[in-house]
Image (cartoon, rainbow, N blue to C red):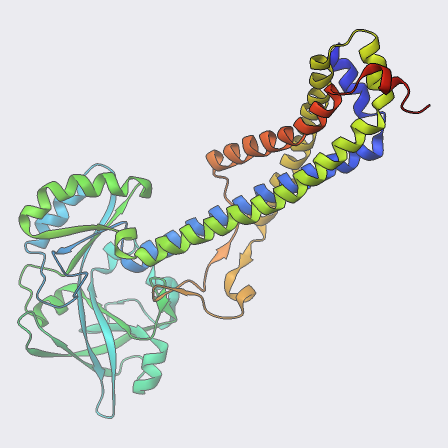
Length: 411
């Protein structure tokens, strides 16, 4: 009976019900859309960072990440590579040599990071071919090919087929030089600006810098990036004995983790402020509704309805209104989600500038929307409890009305 009465009471004052309903629905829908956009932005940034650092896991000589020099080597890299490919949860493996030196011509030189890579292995981590604006991606037509950034090529005054001298420190700290031919020019690579980064074939740089059968780094891409800490823990048990360090991408770039945590905190604070404002408005509206129905409540009391059941009536009305509102709000949130999937937000266009985190350029990111089911469920439960809590005081107020005084309220 209480449910039936509560349902009828909701529609006795349609304008008041519509105001409360719209406030809850739009606030809830806005919260879901914010969660969807935020979660997708985190996923996009994580993918960009994983691309930039070279994998979900990074394996190199212990201490290399703190002081990246040629003295830290992963020995017998082919064997390590084969072992990692057999590790459960591993999707792809790539080994690299990372050197720092100069790209030079007879006229000038430019500082650069030189990466020795196996092009086929690296495709699973990032696709440089998509960023080629001129020439080819190790097309096989030139000896000692090098792929470099457009800006660096302009600074050096070179084009496709021109010679570039690479100067870098070898494994013993001595100066090593090699002659390379420009095979391709890129707009950007691996989530970073193209400037200051050049790619050569792994075997060529390995011989040039005297690495023997070693490499600077092994990158590991996992089937599920969320398993990175578990897989890293398993690998550390064996690799620490070999003098190797295993880092997850978030351990390698802690600045990015701090950015996400800060952004999440601001998102929750923003949602909380909105909900407090909405809930104060709803509490006030519910209280006004109770005061407008003093005579009705007095009549119900006179007919034998206990204060507890009167309070329950107010709460049932709130629950019904909240469920209707949240259903509409869910529709609004899903509509915004599907709109964002199809349209998205170009961060570079919105910001009007390049976006960089920990030295890694994220300007190519287009944010869409992603449903983190756990976050949506927790947020929905929180909204439901907050709104229901907003009716506690009006319900308590209704239980304190004396029947005799309530019956004379409008007299």
